[in-house]
Length: 88
Image (cartoon, rainbow, N blue to C red; front, side, top):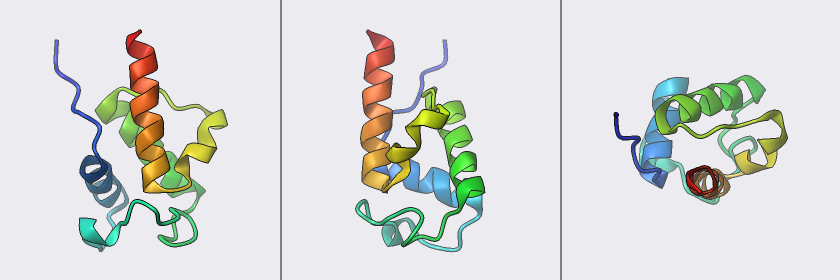
């Protein structure tokens, strides 16, 4: 069975940059920045990030999980908690 990568802030930054073809450096994405207001992501971008997270990290995301996408930090915490809950 293939190992699922650890969920890290840097990993989430790289995922967002690659899936959205963002022309920024990982260091430009601070954990506390708003993904929508500060980084300018829209609903399609957030959906693309969610799909990337599900495929890369095997974390299930539903329509009810939109609050997790407030900041990179909240998204990171959500993904880690969701993965821990799934492992129980």
